[in-house]
Image (cartoon, rainbow, N blue to C red; front, side, top):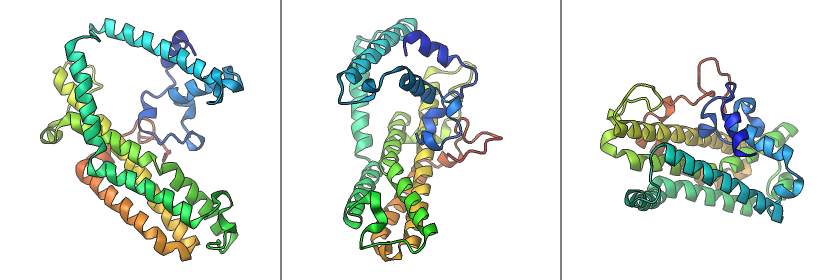
Length: 283
């Protein structure tokens, strides 16, 4: 997809602005794919490209990626010129350095460490409990007691695996915004970053950072909630594995409480499309 096609797609009034920012990226289970720009873009690419350009081990994949980079670079230069931003200024270089420090701080935050630890625990648990995950109920250590339970376990595994690393990614993103905000300012930020009204630039930037942090924290919390439910399904269907699953439940609960404490407004965040009035989606 070239630049003109991308711009034309972005102007489609049927798309929900920013819906992809706070979703769980599980497109196969999402009722809003027809109104998502990211999904539309990816689908357009998959339809127009030959199979070799989708294969990461094929040269055509990297050629395609290089072409996307050139288009993106050109767009960034245009946007910077329109906004009067000098990308090579000393201030820009300083901002890059500062952003790097923020990334490191967010990465080493206790919540980030906890989320990554959980992902590692899940990886180790499946390695130890299920020798062949695809044939999960044929191993000698655990079998579902009925066909219904078998479905429950299959679904539970799918949910756990989908959110295993996703939780850490969204927790990290939420914490990155927290670095921009500053603890003492969070409760005082009430500016709508997407309003057409005139506000102080600094206030708008702080509001945008707070907005993104709450949105990222909310989808992380949703992923935690669903993972907790999936682990409980696993326990009900395979009670002999209950004891080994408890550490994951405890780690998730600690993480859930920590995120809710640092981002007290996250649960109230209204995600575009998903949480708006009239929406029946739970994604």
